[in-house]
Image (cartoon, rainbow, N blue to C red; front, side, top):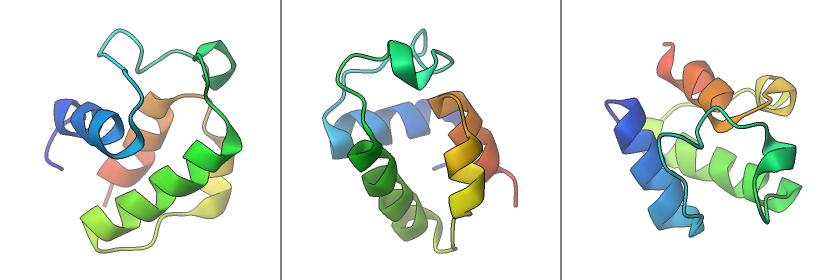
Length: 75
C-alpha cells in the first residue's frame, strides 16, 4: 500500500465497500452499511498488508477512512 489510492482499492476489494476518493473523508456514520465489523476486518487486513500492528485505540478514535489511512501510512 503505497498511496491513498492503493488504500481505497484495498477497502473496495477486501471489504466489498464501493468507496471512492470522494468518500474517503466522509464520517463513518455517513457511509452506507458501515459498521464496527468492517472496522475490525480492515484492521486485520491492514496489519497483514503492512506487516506491522495497527493501534486499536487509534483506529477507534478515527472518524473516517482517511483518518485510518493517516494512522497506518505513518511509520
